[in-house]
Length: 158
Image: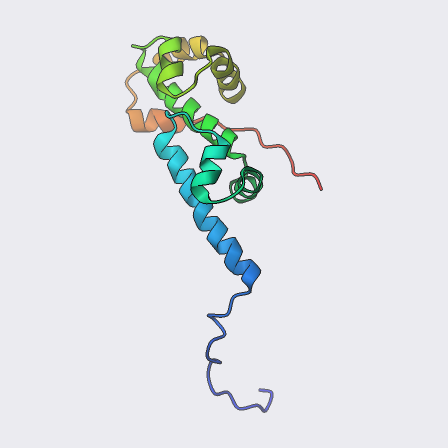
């Protein structure tokens, strides 16, 4: 003991938050709403400017803070969601690659194929052939987890 009497917690200390920390908390709430919107509306035409307007942020601020909070840019996160959904549709096997591309909200087959190959490691047509064999008889919830794309993260440089 230090010899000082303890009278319990000081009132108001927990509620005091610096203005910078309070702004960070407000930004985090907005960023989660942006992420939730991307998860819900991945098949809709979304761009960073529209997402930023909805979050009452500039596009640059949204991009920087989203990457800081979630490890990838809003566009990267959107494309990852689209590719995950495309993988599920391709595993079903009843849609063409072009139909899947447009069903997940991509407007360019070339960009879709390039991003799919970057994330999954093979072109969508090859994935469609292989995934149908590899996940035959597997429950869809297990197939989704097993075949989820893993983004290769680059180390952060100072």
